[in-house]
Image (cartoon, rainbow over all chains, first blue to last red):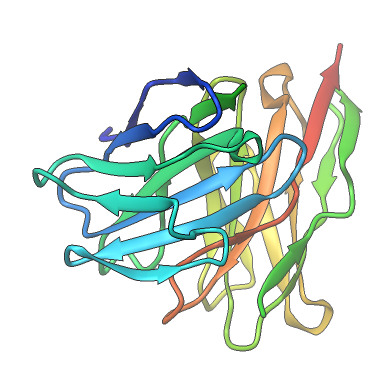
Length: 114
Length: 113
């Protein structure tokens, strides 16, 4: 069964450093998402991406965050200057139509900012 | 604004016993409802979904859920749990023109022998 792949599974970084989280969505999918889950809290929507542009973003997704689909297969989330509060599990998801809104999720990247 | 409440943070159940996980949602239009399961080190796996029609939906691994519009609920059930059902379970809501999902806080299920 096709799956969404995320790398790395765990990323440790120093505060103020830039990180790039990588995702390979399912190949025929058209919509891409990033969500995050701070330890002990809800899974929160960050951003959706369709047709090579952001379709929606949450208040969390400020100027420190950016997304890109650089080569037609990867979907990346960049955090420009990490803060302690960016420590969380980051999930990538994707879906296609007309599968309605069934999103397929990756295993996540645990980001630890020290 | 859409939101999901899972009132139970942690449930412990004996193997072979029945399980019910509660989910209440708030959504301004017709909701699409989902249950996902996350085992340690794994991604979020879709258990079942409700879009329309029959309010009792069947999913994978023997799970079912019932949509009750009057109670804004979408509770998940399994008649007889197996040790492998120990995981965290998330209820989520989305919509036809609003693809992003809003998740509940999750319920951790522990299965004792």
